[in-house]
Image 1 (tube, helix red, strand yellow):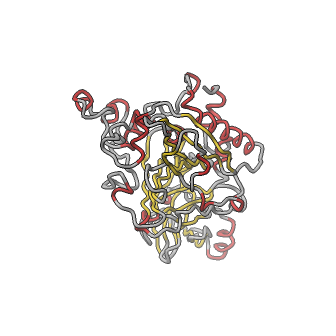
Image 2 (cartoon, rainbow, N blue to C red):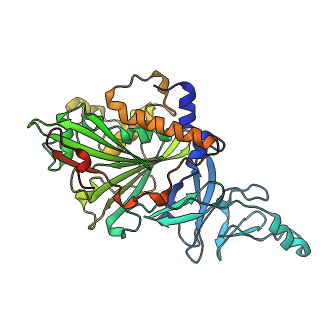
Image 3 (cartoon, rainbow, N blue to C red):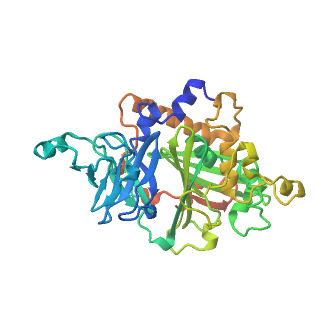
Length: 407
């Protein structure tokens, strides 16, 4: 369990908080690139408890501003998007995609230019890669952009979506770091009688043993399960600070699934899913999910605890469903949200299956405290071989060395 003080520290990400300072040392996934259309309406984006607008100018360049017009505080989501500028519809103030104040027509012509130079609308550096618009919300010079090995894949090898769920970001991250729940919560989907890949083997051992390898960016974690024939099934995850979890997919190592748990605010989070194949176009088998959903919010219709998130109790009673949910991600979203807006970690009784979560909490708390002291707590991106980061899984002899598995 955590103390109440530590739980506050690790969950709060707004401006001025310790975890908020840590988060702002990293490039943050903000919005799917495809959602921004040249000269179309700006999109409202909420991240880390702050409100922004994102838009695409006529030339294709993306801009990311504080939401409020610096004149009278009107939301710039109402602004006209034309000629590479946002024009506030209230008084016509114009802001170039670069953040420069381009025009203040309510000021006399003689002083207009000088006045415009004094006005400040905070804008933020952005990068587009992997179908995502990333934003730098920190102060000073942006950190080096991490060259994750899927960012430059062609569209046919990459699918990105997110679900917005009503709970703190850490609940989503911890759910993706919890290997023990896979064989219980997701047992309908990973039934070994229905699957030909490795993931069904988690059903043979509900109490995995864990081993870790500390990395500059986080850690590698092996969940080791005993199999009936005396061998062991090793599922090797990568955790990359502060919110990335590379999930073993149960088949070829080029088939990858990454989740990113991004704080919207303290009681809302965006749970990103990145499905990709490093060597070939994605297939339905690669995806393993129904993509006939809104990619900008695949949690639409999730509901709340008041209606049990749409849980099908009849299917549970008939034996056709263990959890009452039809998809793995809805199962995740429901149990994460059912912990409450911010989980009370002072009442937990953790077991050996929670070792990855305990390790992650310690790592995050240490980094947040360093950030609160004004120290650089993120890894130096230039020292990390991002191309090597991927999840793997393999059936191997009992006692075999999982670190020797090819990445």
